[in-house]
Image 1 (cartoon, helix red, strand yellow):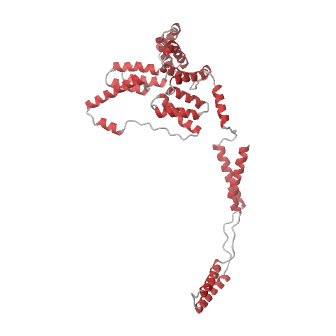
Image 2 (tube, one colour):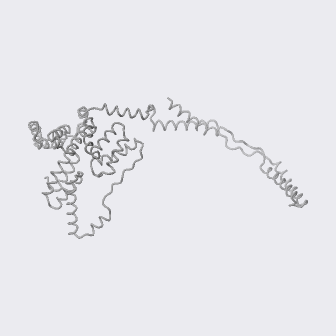
Image 3 (cartoon, rainbow, N blue to C red):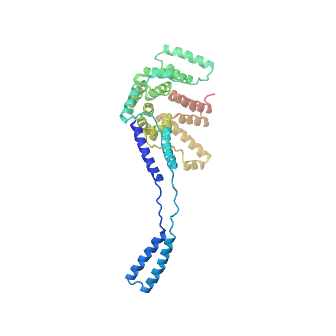
Length: 398
């Protein structure tokens, strides 16, 4: 209520300041302005005579002439034409427009009825929201079902058999890895997450960071994009090993963004956006959401520009002979393969390598890369789609 009282007082004060001049009539004089001029000239003649700047006879003639003009001006004095006289109706119209536009604009762009929320209350509400959010099972049950995969009948039969076999082999890593892959293909992400959790249980302390990242991806996808308390614990475990991990920092930002802490989400996402590969799945998702988070956090943030090869690089390649171009392509492929093998990369980069080996006619190498890439992106539906298309282009898949 105090907010509305303050707004009303300020709006009425501004309206009064703008309308009051319209209600005040303009003063209208009744003297001819020439009269004041001629009187000033008479005074000036007297001063010139005292200073002996004028002879007495010249002063007398000048005084006579000015007096004649002064007399004529006095006889012709009339009141000047009245200026525009504002009416009460115009003043009320202006006041109504000001009040209507002020409150109408607030009604459209503001938040009428929204209670005052101080920062401390917002932080407390955010903590409560995060502490009381649903668990993984509840989120999976509420998540909308993904579109059904269009798969052949014999494939569905084979997956059903694999689902029966896997529980009978609780320590068979290969069987559970295959089950994860095929559950993702079936778009049953809850089952894929459960199978990936079994892989981590089998590996124990030997489980790698990518194994944990894959489980985190599958848990969030299965939960409809929400980060559950169980997923948050997995995030914390990953960050304990590497506090700069891109996947964990991205999903921690998602959690904060979902619980009304866009300021913390922005801080996490900025770090991976400004230092990570823009083609990386998680970095690309952070880039897509960071503008909204920055707006809600009240921060003016501009995404860093994504740059590609320079014109100079392309011009230099165009000037090479066909043999040199082929050698350059071979060197680029070898360099990309070495980097992906040692550092990993995005699905787009693995797909580029698969296609490159296909163009070079090395289908065996393309198939090897295809198999390795599947292990890295088994939990990413979009990543597997990119890799599958590349494998078909390279002739690895019919």
